[in-house]
Length: 78
Image (cartoon, rainbow, N blue to C red):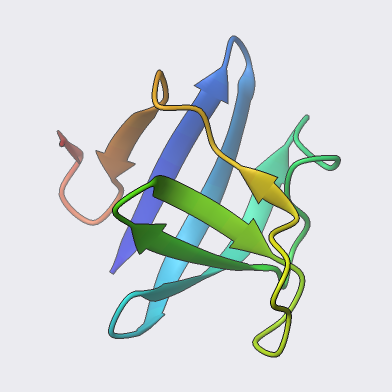
């Protein structure tokens, strides 16, 4: 399953589901500071949080709640 998280105007990251609540960044468009290809993203109660790798305990970036998530497999919005 793949999703697209729109962070702002002309900024988004595409993620792919890899584990229960973990996703991996497969593409970032004008969002290299927030997330790079290979970073891990977790969907938590606090929202979507980006980590550098699976062992990182400190988040790299917290995606704002004003984002928009699109399911790339079906083109539906959440």
